[in-house]
Length: 259
Ligand code: PGA
Image 1 (cartoon, protein in one colour):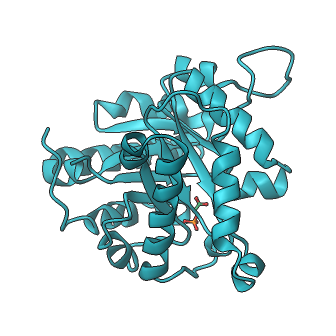
Image 2: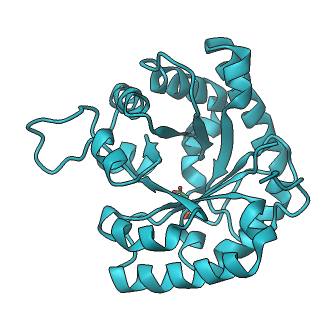
Image 3: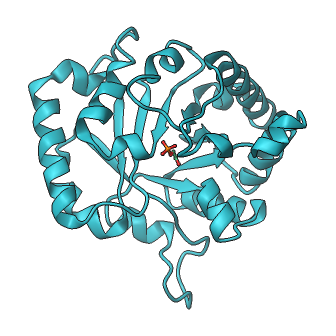
């Protein structure tokens, strides 16, 4: 059984000195507690300016990722970075379609789909973010929205490798509000069904479906108790090491992965 994924999305936070102090604290906590280190697959997604700070502390304890990328391999796109370049600096995961990018930078489903395809082409693992707005939930359109974002987001993916889908209701991000564990489990099951139907059941069943949106140490256990939840994508609460470690503790009940 694969361990659940615990993904820290630092967003546009953490100067280099702060990142260094964070890594020192996380590294020593994980080295001191091998069982905690193995309880989840740790994935840190810092701003790119801190990536080189995180690398020396990695030592097989965590993987690195990026919060965004361009959909082309290279070329005249001032200010952009391609998934191939992210692979070159040691990233393994790339977030695509985060709601903050859809909202503030106008990223369409089509753009997100192109990014996901290039991430896969570069040999990296996409973390495709999908989720409904509050008004869509109120209108009972959650499943429709999720299915559309999923199908568009995966449109260009030709081969079935490692894949992460993050269910992140837009209204839950940074708000302190969350759906119930029951609702999250239902949506995760629906996501997996769509993945199995669009690709192969084997591929759909091996994808990780994680939850994101106001996860913290006090609410993580109720979500982690659902087998449909294959991990968390954590924003605000990932910025403090103790809080992040406590969230990993929520997966205590799961069988640790064999090393
Ligand atoms: P949050 O953010 O944990 O601060 O709600 C989650 C995310 O945006 O991925």
